[in-house]
Image (cartoon, chains in turn purple, brown):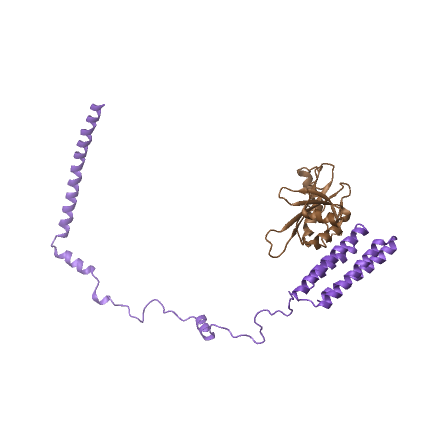
Length: 211
Length: 158
């Protein structure tokens, strides 16, 4: 193997040396030919050079008036815009923005919670309430809760004493009506007494609304 | 073991059944369907003013259907709201439960979904009709005895 590699190296080097010589010779020859053409002192070549150069008279032959490109004209649109101006005047009888015509009342009455409880109970009496005893107990709980809310409002000073007293009286009457509902036997009597209790409940709602 | 609400209801003489507590510690009660209207008003007046969730499930194949109500007591200044779970059971044949839409408005679409999936009819619901499946669908998909139709039958259903 070592002998083989040593044999390749001299052959490559010899080839390179052999190839380089003719390239240099050719380039030298070409360069010499170029120099000979440039360094010649023939008078005819000078005349040709002079002829190739443009005459000084023809340098500025085109005048400004005869310039081929036409000058830019002003745009009519731009002129119109400048005349009109940036802002447009407001038309007559034009209202800016939408205006609310109806106010939304977000405030609730002071007795809103009591009204809500009583409305739920009044709606219960119009539906299937299970048994009479259960309806009476529900009425007691609703009345008790309404009294608690009324007492809280009175303690905070938001409601007058006489209004609270009136509400308590109506709630007591409602409880009495519910006791009559509980004691009823016939269906006809039951329906009549339920209607009476509902009317009393609506009366209590009106009292709570007037707080 | 009884919770606070169960003790209060028992003190008032209201008929119910305590089912203990769920895995989150929420008190669970069972109410009769015929008493649900009155109990709903009582719970609303007690303070449970928000219906957080309503759903239904099939207890067992051929068994009862249950309607579940998760109620929350939302108050100002209270970070941890008090919660309770109410379950109303009904029979599989002609299941009817009173609707509480008139007490908690948030139960509207949820009761419709329960009707659609399990066939529980909520009485006095304003718009009780299917909400997910088409109106022409046959059967209640979430019942445990439901037989799912094959691909071609689904095409026919539409």
